[in-house]
Image 1 (cartoon, one colour):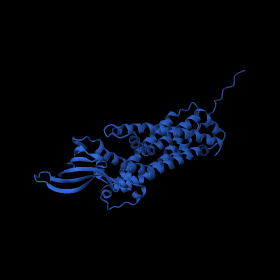
Image 2: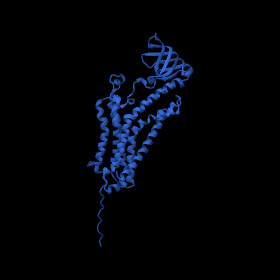
Image 3: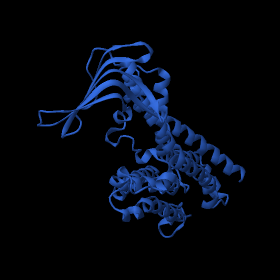
Image 4: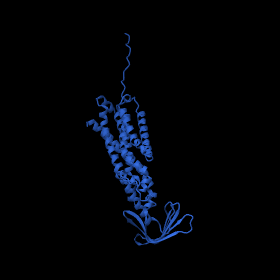
Length: 380
């Protein structure tokens, strides 16, 4: 790579890192404010708060990186043209391919970075976040919930205990579950304590009974137990219980799904869309970078406005990203939509290459041949 190409790469890479850090920081801050209840209502430490919010950074970075690359390429090309460096490079004989080379290296690096996050980093972070939230739920149940009060842990689920004993034991436990439409389940126990079984948090109750009553019925079914374990994951994972959602599963698991699993069978379209999205995400880094280069890659004089080209590039990027989200939603309903998931970024990439190289559209963005008008000879 020539010295001038290394200079271009250095300018574009610095702009990319700055844009990525700024955008990620701003969006992370908005997400962190939404999770501020970890410090207030749930009484967690600052370390737990930062860990929980920090685990969302990989998913934010994956989405933001192609946009940051687009901004960086626009900035670098606009700077080079504003300093007349693009004009000098073109006049010295540098072809569009030579000017594109450092930008292409940055685009390839960004695409590999997005691919690593999409295929490995983001699923890993979501899985870790799931485990942390379950631990927070267990800690909230035994340490933060006040004794003698009725606390709503989930919509339709009420928890109460009389007092706290030594070693984290809670005494006089009462729970009522009204989340099922056809029945009400109540739990009464002398004592309870949280425990981890097979890596999952449970509330273990001792010496109690379970009362199940169908709605409209006056006589409940009562089951007396010596020990009973209640899964605490149901309060953080919603109706899916222990079932791992598509974004929490590794790419290998998505490629080898068990169609007999109830949750997979009921949501197979979402799993299919998640898998193809992971492989399509790196294409947007290449696509957005090429769109920016197609808009501002050719040198222009100071009299030629670049605002229209930049506005067109921004509109194209927004349209491509919205179309990508729409294709993903469509793929969750129909397997034939997989063509659109990959076709949207590839269409933007091909169209950008055509604007850069292909006639006749690619010619109109080059510098026009300026000819001075001939002046009539002055009469002697």
